[in-house]
Length: 227
Image (cartoon, rainbow, N blue to C red; front, side, top):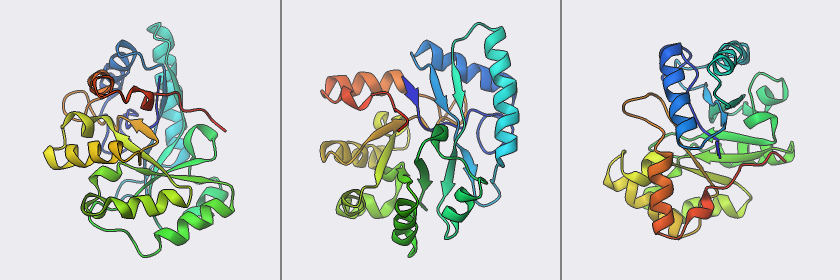
């Protein structure tokens, strides 16, 4: 399996704090059957903006540690990009990462509203050959109140990515209810952990997979293939 959303790189944003914590998370990934991880450090999220060079530096270090520990996990580059109006220009200038050098771009919306320029940014992404993926829509109040707003974006070709923690209820019952509602409506394309640490915002892959299996929705755990 592959995780398409993680903050496992230490010391860069609000994710893992130390190399030791990163390795603890990576060991948990391996235990739960995840062998490819797209590292999606924050970009343009308030004080959190991680340059590509820093992502490369930490990936190189952790990859060496994984090799020494004989843990067969591959780390891939990526960003979780908080939407802003010149997003495409920075992608074209190679200042931001797509997911694993693919045409897919993980985009985060504010939790309480949808910026007025969102549709324009999505359309510009399509025009340049990119495909936007909305990160954790189940935690956006607009989509929680009206899932049809999310369906409008999907009809344009936008992808969506739900969080394992939302499925198992770690973000509260309202978010869990929305997560399962979006799954029932078939408005979700991908699942990611959005892991931040080894104690609270954890992977939850195994727990989410078991719940999806019980609900006969285990097909959501497919391998994310670069196209």
